[in-house]
Image (tube, rainbow, N blue to C red; front, side, top):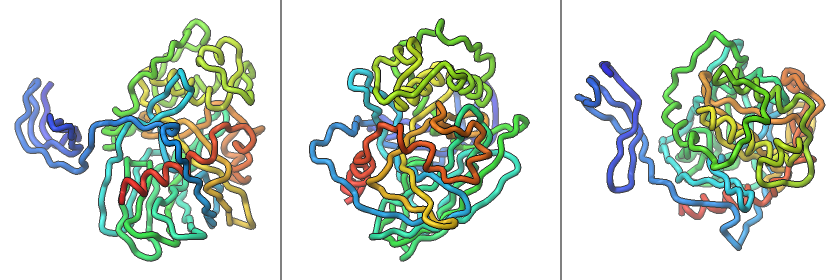
Length: 365
């Protein structure tokens, strides 16, 4: 392998610390000559499961959001799964990126026919864990990607940290409001993704130690990335599978019997895509309801939502693995409240969100 220029990469040290940054120089085989510019310090992973704390903290917070489009609010992602206890787990420590003041931009994907929306968040009480607005693809179609999310300002002004890109935004001091800019684009097969976010996709490529009976999946998966996801979504939403109110571990049950909880489909999708070499994670957030016009109300202790995000040639693409809505085309969802899609069938308990807020705020202090 030969090359010269600037290369994104990771520098490992024996003191259990990695650095993400840029190599600048020349590569000849396995030798590198040049300099390394560190940007982000990464601690080695530890284990954290939402069931480990016996003292759960319930959050009481209402968020009013004024936006032209309905959004989900995201707090956290999961990279692992315990098949014995049927729990999603996060094993990665936070990656703080400190900036003096907003704006902070989270670059996620690329697309065409992009539209930018301004989203105003107002909190009923001061908050340090800032919820990130997000849009996911619904049903078997895969039409839109979130290109980037920019935190424009917080009120009052405060230093803001970004935990792993696309995860959590944390303010140094409690804030009362935040302003975001959200760019939503349409997927175009002619576009290729070359962003630095590929650095973080490595964390979500490890198999989930789930036995997938491939003989039960009549899909060839000749393609990769977006096309592979479309093939999988088309299969899961072909009418052969239904969503149940009960969870049936192991995941083989869902493939064999054609039913499972929404969480079963999230884990199954994550396992299948990872086995195909596509980095995949599960994201946790919560839904809201339209108050009036373009104002939406979100309760942190309200309806939890979980979906799948996969890293493709477009970057991170968020989607619902099996439709819980009567709408199959996501384009129709831009005109309705998104909260109707996931409220009744999701089994993720609401206190998970409050617990993670509690965990990060205590870890920060």
